[in-house]
Length: 305
Length: 272
Image (cartoon, rainbow over all chains, first blue to last red; front, side):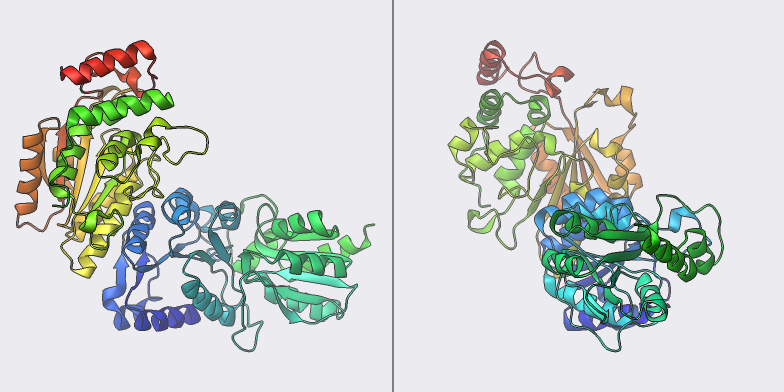
């Protein structure tokens, strides 16, 4: 997934000299290719994210196409106001890349873990939020972000959970992608990022009639499509490596409540910080986001009237 | 310069600010009055807008980072013909365009400011972009002395010096006050010139109400062959031009009534 990101960025930057990569002193090794291929388009802005994002707005104002890279704990969370005021207010085409979303930095603790970034950015007008699930969605999201000519927050989470597509999908902003067909009247899984693979595995293993959707774009979201899915299924399960407050689960529940009320199970981080450290898989267990715990919660949810 | 035929007379600019502040019953008069001479000199002698177009490609960038002084800039934009008179008589009317803080949707205002410490970084980005394009455009950021409490200012200062943005000038309106009191009482700044110099800027301190001194300092800074970004520290008086407002911080918040409006108009006309 990170290789796909680097390849997409280098490809775009070689074709468009107005593309600039700004990093807040992050991305060691990740940008080796970029620095070799496009050295004049690379700016390390130092450990100074507020200035970096404000500056990206200035660069966009004079016709450049900045890609601003940081860890998602910092880009966007540390700089929400710069994104709102300097970039989104004037619809500037700045692409913000938040890497390591969720519990990627499982050993480093709360400062580097990011499970509130979608909630922090969803209410900002003129800002799109992308959350790719695999390398193919990364490629598609990078292309879409570049061609959108608007402000985008691209959330990159755990990158080695396996592909969910077999080729680069065609993504239209706001559309959910069906990655496992199922039957009307059954369960619909709607997942984003790293948990799309988990949703596929659970559905394939235990709910052969269930349909699985990936949400590579969290905002904007196609309300009609979501409402239709909610109408056609008895249970909706939303999965995200993010707080259950303000993320994809909230977005789906908001639409369902207004247009197609249905029971929705929101799988995500339960409004808490990590207490302990350990491997990524350990952290998922601590938060009840490993495959077994999620499968159990779904089974419990199905037995409740 | 595109603005040579404009006078940017400081008495007239102050009168415009008073008129609009009275019409809109607004605050921040003192914040506008400390930067009148700075803006007059910039617009009269330095800022280049090809075709008198506020959005002209190749223009110089003037970023009012201390958005609280925006009435002074509105007054200049009126002189340039970019704002119409009724925008002033209807200041703060329901559905009107001109806000109490700088908004980039108004042609001539480059950024949306008021939350402090933002415009400076955007201006650094503009200067960086100009440097990458290798054009001769200049970028100015006007910040308040209170505003430089913000950490983002110093992030941007490090970056501007590191990248040798010699096309960038920060102008500090050192009026000695911020919202709740004097800068000395709230958060001591020490020597602002020494601070910017220590960050790698070439800096000059002048009387920010002496138009000749301002103009000479700007010319001198741009004439330098050093690769450093520039800092012009302007010692100013908050509320300058109206004796009962000068160095009286209640005019950060106080609105004019008919009596204070008349007294202020008279003071400005007399040039006391």
